[in-house]
Image (tube, rainbow, N blue to C red; front, top):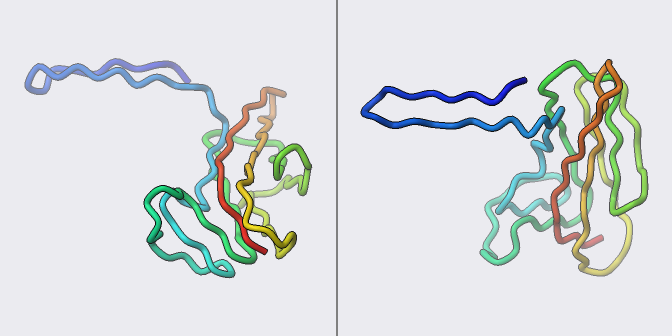
Length: 123
């Protein structure tokens, strides 16, 4: 996928830069609270994503994928080879900690890309 420049409407020119990501984490969403996989608006503006209990992590591909790896920090938790690409992070741990959810997506030609988000997790 190439970068695209559009323009002409009221003199506005836009540049869309493709960062060549093969997939994006679509759930959990920023500024949300998740309580045992139910989604609510976050009441704490400074904390972007809060998760209490289990959470379904969903990934949206932008091209055909061979597999998606799901990580918490540097720990590989699941490899998913079929669409829809998702994994449920179950209850585990006991402290309110900042954690990183990371995915590595691989397309059918062997290219890979990484996406990650930072969350606060309890249980």
